[in-house]
Length: 364
Ligand code: UDP
Image (cartoon, rainbow, N blue to C red; front, side, top):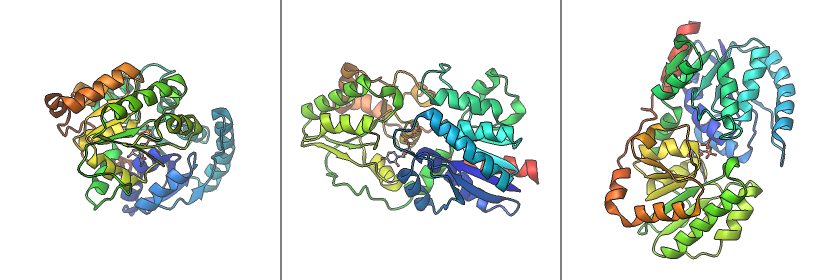
């Protein structure tokens, strides 16, 4: 059976890699990898790391491309790909425009879709934009829903998805993390191993503009107030992020701004970090498994499990709250210990195996 695995952005490449690798070991499956390359360099470095080479590469990324244009161009290309490939099933991961568009194209071509990381919901279509709508649409069209948690399964049931179409697998991000964290890793950036490290990632579209300025102002204050702490922020290349971050945060002696780290060095940075501040979904899943407290620069999350367990805290893109909460974790050992417990509600590293098993039982 021909299984086409689709990847568009860095997190999709990371979270699909364990599935692709597991399928490649199956005698009944012929795996094909389609990269839409909604993101270019960041996708390529992840594929290189996992030894995955896309069979088809649509190279769809253009500077400042509107989401509508991206969708339309992708849709046209997908017609040709699906006609030529005629896959028996297509796997997509997550909530990007790639996922939504591929799901719709496969639906029109009557090809069954497996949705990896299914059932995450904020129940607010505008938030996060456009991810919530992307995953809801993909979820409506999918044949297999690979839910990372029981909570995600409940969300799908609430939307009327039949129970028999849902499999709780854990999140493949933990499979990838465990495969990687076991290796000897190097951050590759000059950080002092004897100083506490605050690691930051922030590039969510919903925070662009004033919220992102507030985040940068708060980081600046924290860096000025804590000269013995190091701050490391690998900055996303999007100009909405990069220009503002460099305006506010360059020239601080204890603040390192750098290009996005490759995946393995980023895992090394997470392992080294004392606190992680992020608006990323994947980092919210990875960091608790490494025992690192996470402060999330959003007011809500579709990943509430770690928040409920007290190892992730929502602090929004609010200046005062960010300064207070980070300072508290730096100063209050008890509060810190309570959040650094090594709780991992998102998986046990076997998610890809469960996905493959489901497909094997269907096809073989
Ligand atoms: N990541 C990385 N380099 C970085 C920052 C993050 O490789 O400089 C990885 C991280 O380990 C996680 C993923 O990228 O697995 C998260 O991607 P992103 O924040 O872009 O997307 P989201 O998780 O919000 O979908």
